[in-house]
Length: 205
Image 1: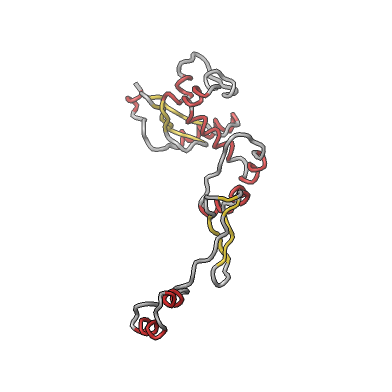
Image 2: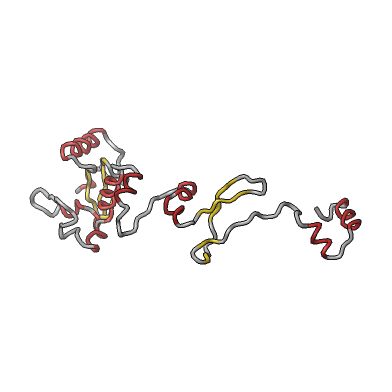
């Protein structure tokens, strides 16, 4: 029946977008959708607060809604038996994930760090390399070490994963080019005239 209208997978249209926007405002919700349940998926013709344009039917709230004779209301998904336990939540992971994304978007990262400071579960932030190096947990656990070049220029380096007495090994600078070459050749019994000759001919640095 739905395919007769030739609406599935069509581009966005202002009229449908307006409906989704109006629904979000009237219901004061971060997410509003105009969706069509077709086969094994639900496709969203218009959406507010949702990045995906389709979801498996098994993960769709609308799959439950179309089975009802009246308005379908879920006041609190955490206590609703259809979504309260882990198995049910996984079956509805896409809409649950979008609800969480909308909630996290309401505050800054610094605000969430404070609010989740005493949280006993695990959570993390998607970061690029420089952000991860400056992360408070990375610093507190000694994952980043302060180092200096041979000329005294400071830089940061990831600490070695092996620790001794809960302390990472103290990093030391690498030698300059051929810094110890002459001493090594001398220790091998090569006289200075020969070393100079090797240098002139470009055999050693």
